[in-house]
Length: 344
Image (cartoon, rainbow, N blue to C red; front, side):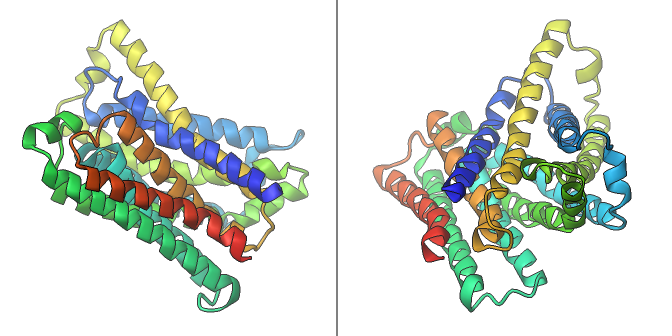
């Protein structure tokens, strides 16, 4: 029962993340780099800071917890900087492929690397026992995501240029595929950053923190690293494209509108990792479900992002065969999430 509850909590957070790109569509008159870094302030700084602060037991401070972590802090931030490259290109993959296909490819790659690399670093044998269950689940998830990617390629072939532009304004399949795969590989560093914060979690538990919240201060360190990468790139783009005027010349109404939707997008994005930490607290430490939780989150993100893709009519114009393949891929993703639980 506890495992099911943990999965449900992760699913709620995943639904939030998959919905985070919907408010961005409501941002008006701002260039990509302007709204991306603005929502990033909320997604990677403000809400993670709030989450970290509520995790600290009364009578203690966030800096007290971090001060006892030594080099773990810099590992978390360093992996966050690398993840920032993935987060940056992840946004671009949405721009060139749309919510459904862009997230599917990027998150699929992220799921595989983010799950397998930590297991290998811990010395896990992926061809025996729990390691084999983990590897099997990841392979099934990748298969489901690959099928969804194939459905996306069929969609591209079946749509006219006008239909592509209507569904995704800047649709570019080849460029989008490269960026989405790069985003997935680099985004896997987020989980490596979370794994590097095990000492911080142990410190919090020793101070009496709740299991539900102990991951939050680690998440903040990783997102700080990611914010650094994204801020450098976006501010450079502001300078290059002379788009600083987005901040200085927008009317009060535009500012209010854009801040509201960037805030909402940031909150929804952060909910996936708040939910991941809370959900993991219901899994047995060192178990297959704990090791597989990253892949579960990514698979759910793909599942829900494609639901949004259907709602937003990004698959409109696709043939019956394409939709059937898409649904098959989504079904395989659901199987990959449930399989480790039944194979224990």
